[in-house]
Length: 139
Ligand SMILES: [Zn+2]
Image 1 (cartoon, rainbow, N blue to C red):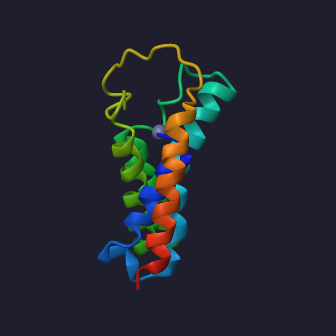
Image 2: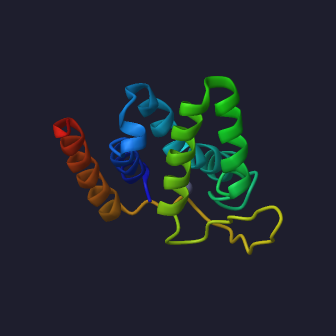
């Protein structure tokens, strides 16, 4: 999934009852929805320190560690929003390999290149626009 799809899911999540009561939770939710790709795609495709774009930040330990950090620094509500956004990202990525238990479990990380599917990107952009409209219309 590309950035627009992840942002659309985070916007939809912000309308869930547990998250919608506080507008301050939108920022950690949106940041967490992009965090795994910002880290792993930068390390994998930018700096080439790993074979692909899903590695250090696409696993349960990174999810829990960053959530604990956000909770300790910004509080429980922000931590909950971070957890929701991050988990939403990982679940949305499950169309291909998500190394959930890395480094405890070994995975066959294939050498990859940045994958950009223009058609998929445009679909996700439309999905994001629809999500923004519904987000704005919701009470
Ligand atoms: Zn991802």
